[in-house]
Image (cartoon, rainbow, N blue to C red; front, top):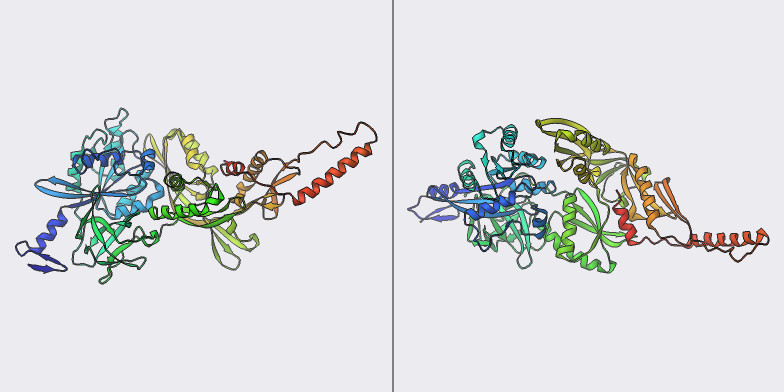
Length: 616
């Protein structure tokens, strides 16, 4: 026996050959595609063809294990699975690291790509290249991945194979024979894809002797075993029982179990450079495990792998229980949900109108919708979500920098020097017929056209720079309706810029209602305030006294509506006679109404509050 590093090898099998032969037969790859281009279906066929999954376990979208993922046809959580495939007399290990396709989860996508050496670029034969395909492709190119283009759904009636082939050739500049044709539904071309993965994607590079470096690309919560961390080892060897360290958090743990990800978790005694697997350490707190962090050994620490970022929420909203007595139950549910979704952030918030709740940070609107759905389905919690808003930065006259996630946090206007709002770069791909509609929509949302280019004669790409606050409400719905669904949209943050943002308060009888306050651009404030006052006038029940509904910026009222008082006809008993008798009764009633208004309290019914939040 001979020893190499921490490993022991047989003398009749030279150490170098042993290392090379192991690394040589590993391929780590992912699939990048736009939503609904058949990514999960293609993964099903790969698993079925290689007998990774038996017939009893096979079902559609086998890697999408949430009901929500199956219903919406999107991947929410990354998944990984190991495939063994015999080719030319050798058994190859193919690690498929599935990635989410939606823009809200782009950081998870970037970390999953960093764990791979190659990617299948999947394009729908009937729809062609879409915005998210391009953005994920650029992420893959930034990570120096080998790209294998695949045209999917070639057996559909509307397949435009020559046109889509030309789009791919223009986009990545490959040869026509490099493009594979396949159908995830009927299994056409699956054998060719597997051969291309082995022949064209390079084997992992790394050293067994170097200190351990493992990139975390995902984690899931198991109620019995704690947080299960998914990783790809770049260098070194990880053994069961090793004392490990998370570089970003600096915490040390013991590796209770390590192994590979088949359909179920398969334990191993050790994992080596190039391998993709899982580790169980008994961690119960989601904040201790961060996607993009590096696992290393506590006694021989390695350097952090480049590219780690703290996940930054883009959209903020309040989540409140419908029944205020259920606040503690909601708190427990939020804690459990955060264990499964580390990108969700929340803190305690109180509101005059809604009571106790949480101020939550989300990656985007889709993420917010998914969190709300999961609270209702998995935890049986009915919640109220307030108007989503983005994070602003306020600079005071004293030079202080304040991050404002909530209208209540906005400093006094006299103390503010300037306010900055987040901007995004929006990429829209559509048909030339709808350019005018998109221009009208984006320019009306304070967007600036940066570039317009024709990808093909029938497909145009528009690049806008826009404030994020303008797209968090209903931008995507309006884009779809103005283009009859023929537009794909993708965005990426590009930093903060100066903006004339004001805090608009809603007052009922001169009392502010904090839950209806909004941070809005000054040019839009008057129109929005008027709509809000009109809507409240419709929804608030009449009282025995007059109610004044006002929208105000600071001390300046910009919109007002009155709800007139319910009046009893006090002059009904007067049958003629002197007018002074009637006037005396009316004056007495007027005085009573004035006193009532001073002590009267206006209650906002729940339905009125919800309707105002859904205001366009």
